[in-house]
Structure formats: structure tokens, C-alpha cells
Length: 527
Image (cartoon, rainbow, N blue to C red):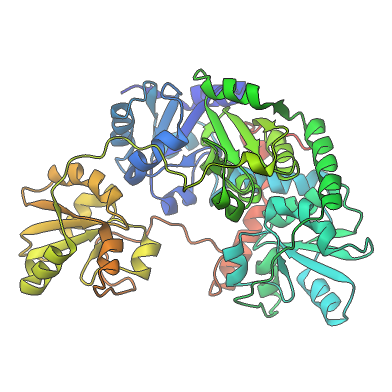
């Protein structure tokens, strides 16, 4: 397996050539330190994610870890999946640092860094939490728009705010604030989406005064002000007149940023081009996408695509193609992605009736390995007759495991399989593997066979089938054969974060512009 040096990877990034820099550790260690454009691509999910997120089989791929021993197995697995240009980063994360490379904390760092650069260069207006609270208390003419995902908004929200995720802002703002004197305040949990959302409305020419809620719900909480929970306020439909105005303004923005355009015939030709990595994203709301979609376009709501770009499109230098049914959301999203130094296209002329493909999106997957399976009833009998003889290993996410799992099942990470087996009690005579659907569990069987001679079977239909059959489930972190490191706990999510952690997160964001300067590979350009 070849190795790639820091110098060579940096040269590829600076040249704008396609490269996928993949951090194959779990998300929490990834969030502690990684290169700017290293996308988190955990070893345990390679078969699930590869064909969708790495669409060109000959794209240059460089995998890395920080000495955990995951990089080489990941590179070999990608090679087995048909990828022909795979290498390992020399020295991993530590080698990157020792060679003079900049390391970044947290997740979605390219997008968050870009948001800080936008505020730095455009002086995006903002109001502090106490200032916004005073406006609310005085009954001032304001409307507060929450730019996060709807589920985040439901968890906690600013009193009286309305859920208007990301790219919906420019399409819906005129409906929610028809009086041009109404002050629009945009919030998120921290900083990025409120900055980008506020600047989106300013860039799009919305006539109202617009400000970001400085530091979002973190700032609100640090000011010891109360949040609402479980709210369901959402945006109304856009009128034809407001949609046309928003579409015109968004197109002007996209053209000024240098966004490229495709018609239907050009779209078909580009889709057939296998010499480049092409990503096709539908930036409408998830509900609209579920009602009907274009062929081969994945759902990526515009605000989240700007917020999590390296996770949706981990190949740096790839082409990104966006579509919507109104000419607003795709152009607005594209104008940001272009400033983030992506080659981005918008499909022109699409109408609602063009989104006619029904059914849920299905990722392309490699052939599923042949495994021995058992039914729910068989597992239930085994656990009742001799529970100590059967070890149920659950390879779902840590979040899902804590929500629901088979009683007695152990949470396990594929990336730490050997250590997980060492945590199990003596007397085990067989292993039963599961996850939500048992899809991931099937790919784990081959790994486990290298570590044990005991029988290995997969639960047919997974934990979902167990629950659907009316079998009991339990919740909580009851049996952890592996640590809960597959997801990094964001300091800005949930309602029980320590004030010190929230303030440290804000301090980190404030320093991102300086880090961008030291790194020097981003190519961001704020217009």
C-alpha cells in the first residue's frame, strides 16, 4: 500500500485537483484533531458509505488515523471495493502536525471556518442575547427565524422563534416579515448558520434590517435566559410574487459568485461523465424530497449542505450539482459553495412536476456477504434457555443503542472489535450480530471470524425486526463493550451542556480565521 506525504497532499489541495482525505477514526477522536479537509469516514461504515460518497472509483484517496491501526485496513478495504488510487497518509495526524500542517478541532470545520471568515470580511450585523431579549420584552416589531434543522429547533428554541432551516430563509422571509420595517433576527445553536443565514438575507436584498443572534442558543443560555422546548412553529408557503422576487435575487447572487449552469440535456451528459467525481444534491426540504425527486439526486437541504459540506461531498475538487423547483434555494446554496472554492452547478428550468421519482433514496452498496442468519424467535429462545451462552453484539450507533436495544445486547464498535470481545463475560458459546436492520452487522462477520472460532450468526432484520415482533427492548448505556466514541458530543446541542464547554466552543470559533490563515489551503473567497 503506497504512502502519501503531507507535502504531496498539500500540493494537491492547493492545485484544486480531486482528492479525498479520509479520517477513518470514529467521530469523537476525529473531532479532537484533524487536517482541515479531512472528512470523517469511519472504518466501521466503509461499505455503507463508499459508493455514495466516493462516486469515482479511480479518485485519489488518502486515508489517515492517529496510530490506532485503522488506516491500513481501511485502505485495503477500499481497494477491495474497487478503488484503484488509495494511499495512507505518512505519519497520520501526528505526521501532518510534525510536517508543519495545521490541525483543527470539532466537526464540519471547513464550513464553520468559512462562516467566521464571512463575518470577518462582511461585518455581518449581530445582536447579543440580552439585546434580543429586551426587544422581545418590549414587544418590538421583530421576527426570529431559526436556521437549524427542524428537529434541532424542536429540542430547544428562542422564545417566539419560527423554524426556517438554512436555504429556506430567502424563499420564506418576505412571507414572515412582509413589513420592511420588521427586524429579522436569525439564530442557530452557535454561530455558523446564523451568520450564513443573516448574510444570505442581506446578500439576497431582503429589505428588512437583519441581524444574527450572536452565539445562538449558546449565547442565550450563557446569558441565563430561558429557552422554549418542543415548539412546532414553521414557515408558510411562499407566494408566487415573493418566490419570483427571491428567485431573481438568488440568481444574481449565484452569477456574481461564478456558479455554473446546466440545462436538462447538459445534466444528462455530465451525469455520464466518469472522468470526474460528481455529486447531485436536491436542496429542497426533506418533506418535498419525500413527495418526489429527480433521478440520482440525493437529499441535502441547502442549509445543512453548506454547514456539513465535507460530509456530503468528501472529495475536495469534485463537481457539485444542485437542483430545486423554485430557482431560489439551489442558487442561494450554490453561491455559498462557490465561495468555499467548490465547482458548483445549478440545473436551470426545473419545475415541481419534474420531481416525479417516488420511493426512498437507496445508497449503492457492495454485494452483501453471505452469512448465517437466525430468526427473532430463535434468538428469543436462546436468550431464555441459556442467556450466558449467547453474546448479542449490537453495531448500531451509540445514540441508537441508548435509545433501544435487545435486553442483554452489548454495544460494540467494529473499529475496536478485538477490545470489545475482551469485555465479554466467560462462557460465551456463540455470537449473534445485529444493528438497526442488520445491514452493517453483515459486513462485520468477516472481521469477527478472524478473531474467534465460535459460531457467528446475524439476526435477520436486526433490532427493528425484534421490536416489530413485540419483543422487549431496553434503553440506556447498559452494556458497553466499546466506548461511546462514534459520535462527538457537540457543545451546542442538547440542553445539559456545561457553561465552560459552551464558552470554550465559542472561543474556538473566534480563532478559526487565524487558523485558516496558518493552514493556507482553503481557497475561500468572500464576494
